[in-house]
Length: 189
Image 1 (cartoon, one colour):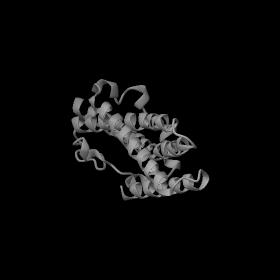
Image 2 (cartoon, one colour; image 1 turned 135 degrees about the vertical axis):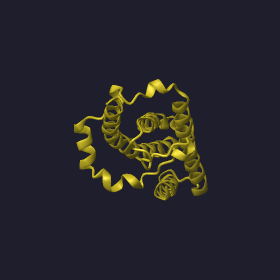
Image 3 (tube, helix red, strand yellow; image 1 turned 60 degrees about the horizontal axis):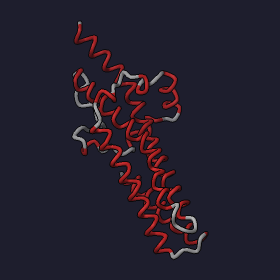
Image 4 (tube, helix red, strand yellow; image 1 turned 30 degrees about the horizontal axis):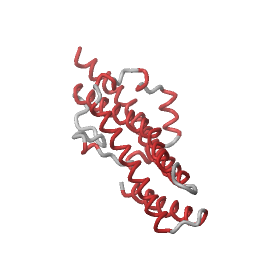
């Protein structure tokens, strides 16, 4: 989480500096508007996460084609050496009451199924946030002299911060599916 806060802070200072240099804005104004667009994109991400959680669970079926991870996709994640960095991605399951940074009961079919459901919620939320984060450009497009550029850069950083979470969730869901099938077979035997 500290890494994310650091990245966001550095981007705020850099984008505010960019705006004040390129467009000759007052640095304090540029810093304020940049910080405002960061807060706006965080609010959008929070709203998306809340809407996903309030949506019917049947929309997040781990056996649905969109949530199924192929061996080829898993291989892609392994080429990214995801095992080395996946634990550095912030996990904020404490907001939903279900933490996904550790598998507590791998032998329980119900627990693994709940873990898969929570992963699907996360995948959908992060994916949708990648696109809806660009909504912050709308109000800034009415402001003069390039404010839309700063909001677009903030939206791009939002995408860059959401994509690794999607990768981690999908990488883990492949393994969880194997565990789920094993537990299902054991339960029916």
